Image (cartoon, rainbow, N blue to C red; front, side, top):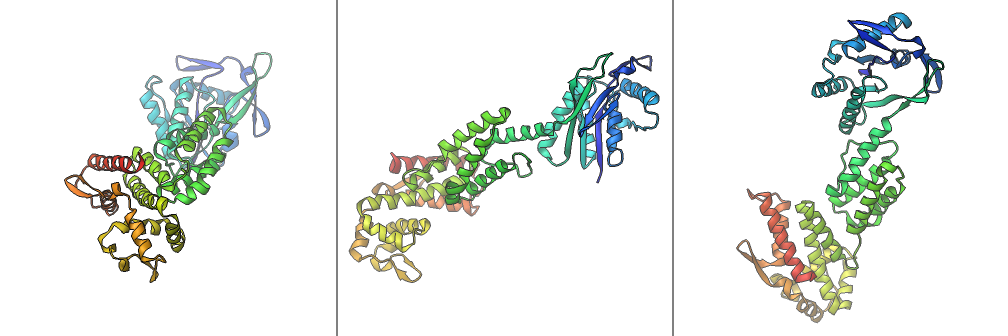
Length: 419
């Protein structure tokens, strides 16, 4: 595995003229604290060599002047330490940001694991590196192990040595990733599977569990477990840079994923929400289930005891219950003897009870309506469209056509069942 420490060189403590470097004052040497150990260094390059030379390749990214100056520093102060200046890491033009970005990106690509030092270098060079690291870390959160920076604990003066503490900025890359995830989640309800975080792994797990349950329509677990767990994790976030985003997402989940008094209303609201996010098949599947349960609910208003016997017979299995009530309107169930069966056992209701619930079937649902020149009941329109999408039978119709068809079905459902 190729591993490297990448550092950006500067010329602090001196200057370069006519290809010759001068160290202004060796009192530029300061105390550096790294991993609780303190030692004098002129800058971070010799520190990095001391610390990592046995495990990592040391890669300086440099300008022409920075190389000349650091060669002078090492010649006078660190003659026993060796530095390899690879030409491919030479910044030829400090104003060519595009070329600098490409150089940084190629350096990151070359190694499996990197530690980055952004302490020195001209002001815009470390800044550009930070931007590149944010972009790169979103693609691969495992490669960048540390981002080192010398924090000034005590200001350096000619009369008194400064004290610099080497800190790791990697956690801020994690915050950038988490910020993106929190901001984007309510747009698509998905999380890039490669993103991980030591500090926020429980949050990422909660987001993924919510997403998995929603996309699989595992709604009982979504409402009973995943929503509550996600809201708990969002409430734990106290980091000022992402707390507002966390609370905004909390409010969205709290508003859009509430259980309604009736299950068919819960499914209906979810269907509309996922339609807006352009999850057509999931939206239509929820609309189909909402319609089935609406029919049951409408009939139950008139014949509560009969419907409760049916619910008990099917052990409150919503799919089987919905299937039973949808098929009340099918021609093959006109005769009581042909009514739906389960495990070769007949639904325990009398013939007159069957007739009562069949006659209570919502009229507006069984009325035929014309959509795309096809005259069907709303039940059949929604069921056929759902099956068509689920079995990849959409032929060559465009997404826009599918979108318009489902939008029309939702409107018809609203007009006939909700309003």
